[in-house]
Amino acid sequence: MAVFTPVSLEDLGPWMQQFPLGKALDIKGIASGIENSNFFINTEAGEFVLTIFENLSFEQLPFYLKLMRHLADRGVLVPAPIANDQGELVVALHGKPAAIVSKLEGSSQMTPQPVHCAAVGSMLARMHLAAQDFNIAQPNLRSLDWWHATTPKVLPFLSDELQHLLRAEVHFQDAFDSTPIYRALPTGPVHADLFRNNVMFDGERLTGFFDFYFAGCDTWIFDVAVTVNDWCIDVATGVLDEERVLAMLNAYHAVRPFTKEECIAWQPMLRAAALRFWLSRLYDFYQPRDAEMLTPHDPAHFERILRLRESGQVPALPAV
Ligand SMILES: Nc1ncnc2c1ncn2[C@@H]1O[C@H](COP(=O)(O)OP(=O)(O)O)[C@@H](O)[C@H]1O
Ligand SMILES: N[C@@H](CCOP(=O)(O)O)C(=O)O
Image 1 (cartoon, rainbow, N blue to C red):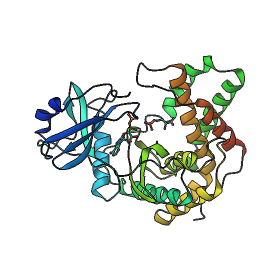
Image 2 (tube, rainbow, N blue to C red):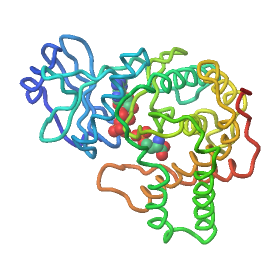
Image 3 (tube, rainbow, N blue to C red):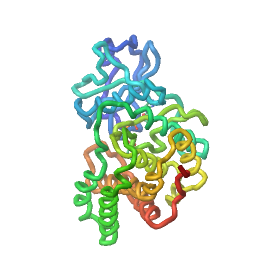
């Protein structure tokens, strides 16, 4: 059960009058979310998704929703937010911020093949390019500053060996962050959480990226690394599957060629992407929030991935 704020068809009736979608005919809670209350709503204009934001504020939300609108207007497959009669994308419902977005067809592909990875790589590059002229800047809020703030909160729970691994990786990333190579990496709005459960497929056809609520401005190659670390691995071990990695990277490169600095930064960024999710999973595991984290994700998965990306060879980015 992950509907934190219940909404009935009766609640929806008057509220929906401000949207150009006709009458609401049906509303169904979506069980699988862990952050927000999500509902499928059937209206006279078709099916949509209603989200009530449980943690993000009215001030924070325009970045995410306007970014989705910007991308949707440029042909990137993402849910399109629907504006009300005042042109607003975020409107209060039961005292909390809420938004309506278009419903993507299909379902998440949890056992991706190279063909799915190629489709994701290509759409990710299109998304990076399309977001270049988006005019609201918000940093990735789960980046270096957050790693610094969060590390001391989880260290007391870890063994000496894990403390050393965490401290050493944060130190490595600090040092890398101040290199000319890092400074030369192309940046822009990124999804920053493009895991398999945040993409829809209808068979082999990608129908959209969603769940943009960790998006922020960061390096494009970090976004690629986050995506590869989830889509192109053997889930049990975290080992990269070369065929899927190359399918994703080649498809991305065909749309937006990697730079020579990105080729050098690739392995450090795979490490950064592993660290990001190891740390957030450690934090959620040891400092759980009230109801919203129903089953914390396993931190050991990203600890394994971090160790592998630190020590092993990784497939190179396609040559410039
Ligand atoms: N625009 C959308 N189109 C279709 N399904 C969606 C859409 N947005 C969310 N969903 C469904 O709702 C579920 C929960 O959404 P998600 O954004 O992951 O929630 P949370 O951020 O609360 O974890 C997804 O797994 C998906 O099945
Ligand atoms: N992808 C992250 C958790 C973020 O949750 P989401 O369901 O909102 O994508 C992880 O696996 O740790």
